[in-house]
Amino acid sequence: MGYPFRKNQKNNYIQYTVRIKEPILNAVREISKKENISVNEIVNQSLEYLVEEYNKK
Image 1 (cartoon, one colour):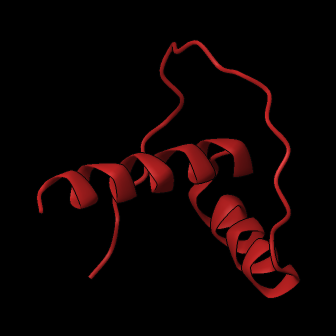
Image 2: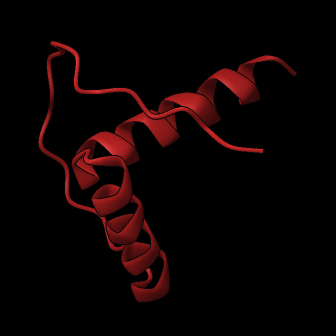
């Protein structure tokens, strides 16, 4: 099962600082390199997916 990452779309962003566990960030950086997409965009798309799935309940 995979998640199809997509290139950055024009959106309004708010800067927000979070702490991410090192192994998770390292994995996200690897995905970023493989998919040629920014870490920020991966985090945004992952959170978007999480919210959509949560709201299906």
